[in-house]
Image (cartoon, rainbow, N blue to C red):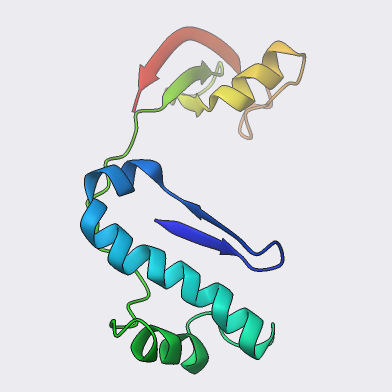
Length: 127
C-alpha cells in the first residue's frame, strides 16, 4: 500500500488502494509509512523495519496498532502473455511482454529438451 524510501526521506503510496480505502488508508497506512521515516531519523539505519522503535512510534505517537501488513482487497491486473512453442513438446511457453520484445530485437530462447529455438505462435493470452 505504501513504501518509505528512508535515504531519500520520501514516501510513495498506491493510488488505487487509497481511492478504494481512503479513510483507513489515511489513518493507518500513511501513519505506518511516516513512522518508518520518524524511526529512521530518531534511531538510525540499524533498526529493524518493524522493530520496537517503529512499534513505539505507532503506539505512542499515533495510538494505532503496529500492523505490518494491510488487509485491503487487491485485484490483480490482467497481463498479456505471448505464446511460444518448440518442435518437440506439446507445451506452451508464456513469454512476458518484455521477453517478447527481446525476441523481436533478435534474442533467442531455446527449448531445454530439444535445443531448438522457441518460436512465437502468433497467439496471445490474457491472464
